[in-house]
Image 1 (cartoon, rainbow, N blue to C red):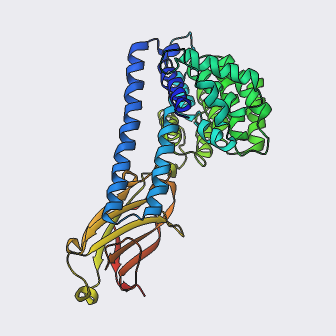
Image 2 (image 1 turned 120 degrees about the vertical axis):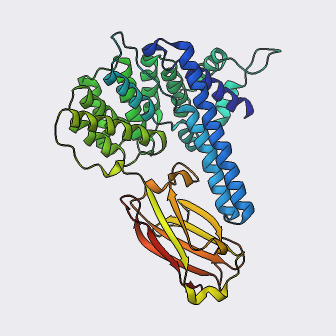
Image 3 (image 1 turned 90 degrees about the vertical axis):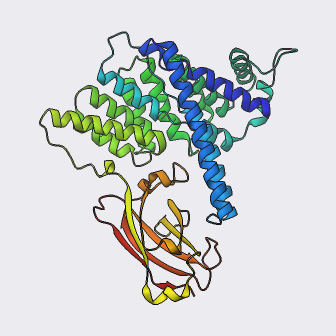
Length: 413
């Protein structure tokens, strides 16, 4: 299995270097940028993991939650490794619209390869294919790993996750026509009832768009329609429609498509969609056209003023721990968490997306949340009898011009 993951890493990392070359023709500069972006992902992973370990050590995070969040971070790191941007070859002069098009497409290509791979579970077959270095040599080169994968698929074509890996490799290296063929093979062998099926349908539409040099045609529209018939909010298909509308200067239509795509988007895809919406909004303003309300662009932040009710002051010690959380209404996993001491009260603190433990568990992922503060007698994050607490719900995550007052005024029974 070690060679399997190394092979995947080789395929992904080497392919990343070619992503922007067909469009920008600045190969060395782009390779450097991609390497920096990859390193940033790794640094963010290490920083978040260190934060989780610190929270667990300080008692603000239970072991079960730590294990869940750590696993999510590891998955996100692997997904980020394949979420590097890809662009179609464009012979014409590069303009702002083309840059917006390619950037949005690249960031919206779903990096679901590992999820599909884990779901269908053909690790042994791929491990055999990738564990074939030349005698006396180390790990396989890109060409060796790709050839081994193609040989494995020729011998065992009923392997949708293998075809998916091959499709993404071709897309990352700029061989879009081959990517189309590989995605078609994924759909041939992937059961239609599989949850990943609509996503692969959308990615096939993207591959077709790339192979057609970034031009929309009826064949691509048919594929998009078929995708949206299965999943009306499929990100890739809606992203393509938004890009097509943007290039035709239908900025209102582009905003509508991208806002709908945001329903299921997170991480880099969501940021890319928001960026596209901002550009389309700016174009509408420049043209003097009406601009729709865009609550999706509002920054998620809550300013809390936390204090202790005077009648409970004699029940606490200045060194006791105060836990401050923002959670989904009715949920357990925190979207933001802060640890302070009683001696810090009263205090004012801002909760925002920078405090997220994972990209999927951010304050901006919810329109409203529950905020709470608790003085722990034991120093542990789990509520116990005798703790003091206060809670407010629902609290909007955006549009809060004034601080929210939260008073710790209850005793946990």
